[in-house]
Image (cartoon, rainbow, N blue to C red):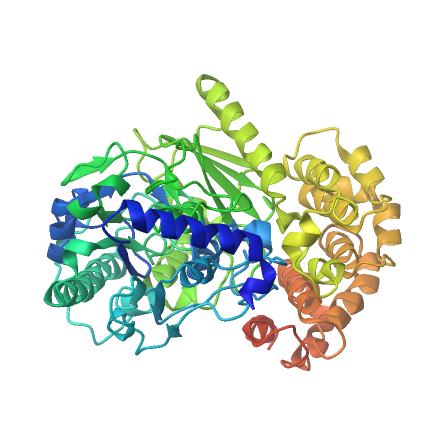
Length: 620
């Protein structure tokens, strides 16, 4: 029961809600209208190609936020951040998809609203990477509705449209409404018929999501609730097109956010609220939970990592917004980003990986396949071809002069100061929220021992974050002269430090691997599977034929899901994939790899089969 978890806070919440009710005519109803996989390609944001009359009309009565970020560029981590008021990479829920325990003794914010008397309904997608700590919603189903509340009861209702989801872009039977000839093709995409059609179809499905919003707003009006309901309209991350979705650039994180606060509740409006106006306040998904509580008259708990931007408990605006990328389905990665509203800084902690790792679901979009084909044919511009190459450790973009984020200013002397400022903000954020993303996913489960990764992350005895982050920075910045320090890291008492030591040597290639050959060979016997796998990959890619003869069976064994956990199998399969033709000696073993095994939750179960299928196809 929630009352057992946080009785003192709930008692305070109820007291506040009673006093708030005495001061105001009533508590506001709150309606969230969300839509999937689309950014600010809407008329109210100045896009003349878009057709979004319903949200445009809402914006004319309300206000749009011009600088809102989703934190994550894909749905499940975004929703994880929304529902918790915590950054998903602080809770361990940043991977797409995953499921980890919720932080001990803490509720999801609708539970606090319910305790304060709100009817909370969700229609109907959840898709959280956090296990629910008890009953969260009064109803979470395709029948959930504000109309099911008790008479006079205030409501918080969520409706989600899937009409604009990435999968709808690739529907071959779709009859285009928007003219492909009028599409603005971003400079990172090749200008081909496939790309133009996908972008035009994307605009069509955004129109369909807008129509869903229109129906809900009409229903609200017909029920006589428009004047007593605060309405949010927002997308769950940027567009579903490749290099927007899944990437923590501005294009992947910038979302439409339109908010209408009726005159009856003008006391809950922020100072810059103006009907038909805009706000340039920095806002992100981590701010939504405290904001909802603030609108209901409840003080947000101190452990929430966001800031209320509406309501009685309005907080000062942040100086920065933060984004992140973790594992994307079957492919590993670790990226963090930050913006001050104009510049976007991207920190790639795994720069040895290319941007366009083969990810089965993304390859179903025609744009992805056409784009890759032109890369192999050598027919792309440098801006278009960058996606198919390794990432630099740092990226910096000026949105004022480079809306598509293709001109990396990280090495520009004129931008050194802003890069240093944003780099510092990113590193401080890691420490402030106790980012657990620097522990390999399987190791995270082992260290948490059934508990929440968030709680593990806040225990410095179990997670010496400063030391781990220092090693990750050393490993991934690729500075010269750092091999001795990475060799030393391989002897550290903490397995995450050893992992980054091995990874740093792998990132540097043949010379570093040869210099640390003895340490890497010793790491093949490490207690941590992630250290063993990383050391094996380094020796397999850049060592000798004798090294490969020894390490290939090790990688093949770890890739056997029936013998090792799902996370070890995912890591080993990615390593074998990175070896390419050098993995040919174990091709026969690869053909016999199982595609079933144990995992913490069914959300993980599709990733090993995808990787096995890719490898088997290569070595047929």
